[in-house]
Length: 327
Ligand SMILES: Cc1cc2nc3c(=O)[nH]c(=O)nc-3n(C[C@H](O)[C@H](O)[C@H](O)COP(=O)(O)O)c2cc1C
Image (cartoon, rainbow, N blue to C red; front, side):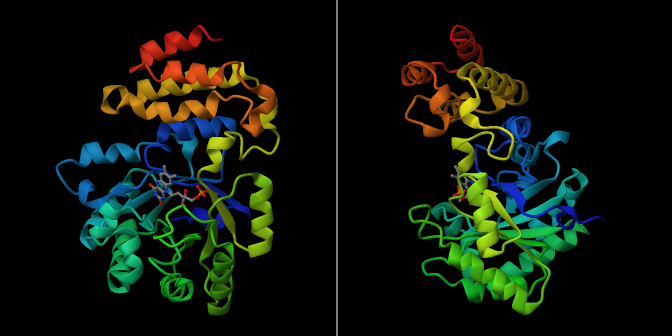
């Protein structure tokens, strides 16, 4: 099977997985504005995928053709369930599988999953091998942090690089740092040097605080990574992957139209199976006042009042009716 990672031009630009944000609907919106080189799904629990609740959990793995190449991100702690889930993911037509070894949330770390694996090399190895076996040829990557409480980049990265991953995504913070401090990009640079010294082929992707394409290019050159993963930067600029568009040139009417498309697609895709209030976290992206610099020339009059009004509506129909009066 072809490994899509090796056919991408560098720097590889990746939209980061974000729980309850980067579902298939938002990924389709991003693809319309300017597509990254790779999309990731939200993290999906392998124990859930191997339970009676599989259909519900599996909704996270919904995607459309426009989202290729797309990587399914999984987490959990039972290697057998990783094996079974990897087999399912392959059948669903994904381009790759990523294992989450970085989420710092207390509830998942307590179970020994995600960032907890940084201190459990034996289980991390079993999980990677089981996933690779289930994936049978589909590339396998790991997204992780640089430590749990303290920075331990070298020890952890040396171990992971010894397992011949297709790609390693490093979020330059420890789990304890959550998102509270600037990402340690120098540590990401150390992983690249280590990879080169170990003479392994694993691609290294840096992640943390990248807010623009210029910033991504600067970090690509300075730290010699193979690519950059961008998470929250998409909230400031939906056109972040599109070199030919200056977001300040997009009128607020166009952004409103895009929000209407987003809500319509959300409703069509999820109906009553997802809580409509999830949509509310997106309003700020589309409806912004003059304080949001990137949109300063194209801000909507009374943006904050419009957003306050919008929060009152609990379903797509009412929200769309209101928005149509603002056009
Ligand atoms: C709301 C939210 C949800 C996230 N969900 C996930 C997830 O499901 N899987 C994952 O690996 N990382 C997740 N992350 C972490 C991001 O992928 C990324 O590593 C982090 O935001 C740092 O990148 P940034 O500074 O570019 O945002 C999430 C982050 C946010 C803000």
